[in-house]
Amino acid sequence: MKKDWKFLKEEKVFNDNILSIRHLEYSYAKVDKSMVFTVQDMSNWAIIVPVLKNGDMVIVNQFRAGTDSDTLEFPGGAINKQEEPVKAAERELEEETGLKAEKIIPIGVMDPNPAFMTNKCFAFAALGCSFTGSTSLDMFEDAKAQVISEKDLQNKIKNGEFSQSLSIAAYLLYKNNL
Image 1: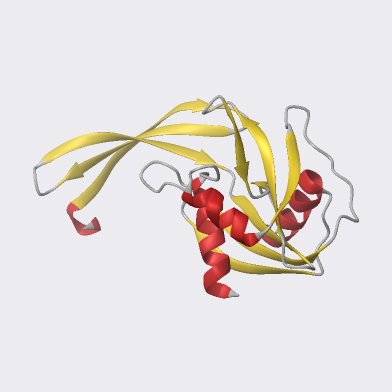
Image 2 (image 1 turned 135 degrees about the vertical axis):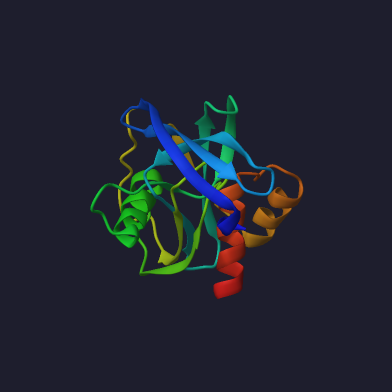
């Protein structure tokens, strides 16, 4: 696989405070041709599966410009430079939901879309959660926490109401690890 690909050159085409975009040219030996691939560099992310002391879960409803819709998903967000992923998970959990956890456990690491994205998404289970913190949403963040039973979450996944891919993957990691 990789042995058939040869890196030729890189061109930086865009950069802002959220992401950078590069064009990478590779030669593919099997067809003796080259192609330019667009690659997006972003911060790593943390996503958290919050579980209350009674076993219910917490999801957030928030507006997403990419789909021009409200989505149901687990809390999460960007990991700041030099920040440990577990600390980012703890911070994002409280910022978006007001939850504090008795224990935060790493449950997996995902490549959000390795076809063109270079970042990682670190998944965590937050166990023994309670609403003892305070929310602190970013200026353009509009998230509302909702308590949901695991059975209702499963039904929302089945009927497409809970469709954010990283949240579904985090839930599967949670189920496979705990």
